[in-house]
Length: 114
Length: 112
Image (cartoon, rainbow over all chains, first blue to last red; front, side, top):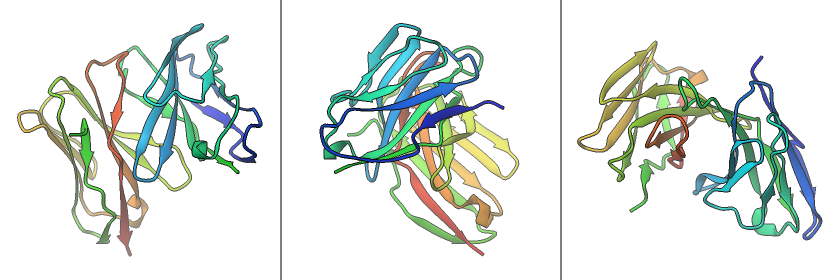
């Protein structure tokens, strides 16, 4: 079954405590990305990666880091989380061939920073 | 003007109603248009995908694109309570590797 798996699904953390949200996909997709979804603001792209070792900023990259050492994994790192990073986060992967606009989303990670 | 504008909602309709969801956009370079459905506490999933102006039908769902007016719509016929979800429009300039720009989404509730 095609899947994008992200963990943790729910997390409450304190300001400044580094955390990593993992993301893994089993579809051999080259393209992966991270979004945050906030009420009234919709889905906004944080970072994306076109392939291994290739990453680029999206619309709201401040305060986030990513890495793409393997094709299947694309972790999101918050080095020093702040309350304004409280949000619902989605990892996604995309098939760049064929119907290149079919994005597969993970189930989401609810992050609260206190 | 935002690149993609979507009716904010929320929208509540009785079961069996015809639902019309709309998005407008400002960037005439957009060529690919999608509708995603997002159930509560789940990730969005692709519902409809269209490339050109015109209509595309899939069961009870019809996606309509009017590039001259920069306007896209999703119609849901015979709406069901299971259609209750948030619907997001999305669009991109090229197919494979360009960024998707999403609307903010509209929450639809279908009352039994």
